[in-house]
Image (tube, rainbow, N blue to C red; front, side, top):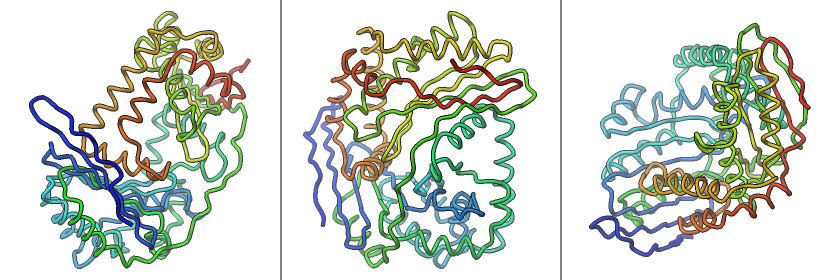
Length: 427
């Protein structure tokens, strides 16, 4: 069924009148097309979310989704790898292909007039990829190098380890996979996963820019309307874990990572959770930066952020410090987290709102960001939020609303992972 989700009231932007409309169409095979017409731009972005992320990697072939995302553009339809690359480059596409937890994302932005041609190319990539056997080994080598580079990036390493301990399988997987899993890959396994997971059921195509809805819908119908739906993947997982872990590494620095339960997207507390994260870590005047780094000089980097899945969310904190100051860094950080429910100042809320609104405005002006936001909203919520709705949620933030959220989602039951010479005490 095809419908217009909303016709936004035209707004003035400088001397120009800007009108934007958002449309959706879902086919019987489970494919959804979303589009936002942005008349004030000349560009457009096209975004594909396919249910083929690393959560579906076979147990002994962890890393398959990431390798597949690298292979997917190595020839498709009647073009070999070089011809396909030239065709994509001739459109001036700024593009990317990457595997996430549950979805593989293919993205491209270009001049709006090039979107129909880009859609034809992506239809070949998604439905008729070559996946040539001679490309597998060099891509495996690159994947192994990426894993090796993780050992030289302690901040990334400790966050990967935190997620591996905190979340249940498969939410604890790292998209990079494992050395053993990557070495176990065969071209037959990759082609089998492609045939099994690349299907219309759950796939979201989103387009934003100066486009026309009806020609776009008809083209997608022609290219994907007969695409067969695949199986419905399992998306029910166990509870998160609580633990304290240390990874010994002979270094002069100690990395600290921690996580605890928060409110997921779609929850009434979602923006209060994001507000709390930004009070802690929303810039150089935020609490953790001020109290841990600036006043005491305990660490060179500290940040807090909110991470969401469909059914759960977490607050995460990272701090990197010298080994001799690690215990004090952890103690002061925990004290700040526990002190947050004691009170929040109105000027902190004003700063948080300004930051969230600034990000919203920047998103509204970018075709790439809008295409991504359309697909993200549909994936998480089954609908597209209006910008007015998001702004109203930001405007509704108050010290009281965040403190009430912290009563429901207190900073406690931490999972803490440290990486360095010696373990730390969590009290």
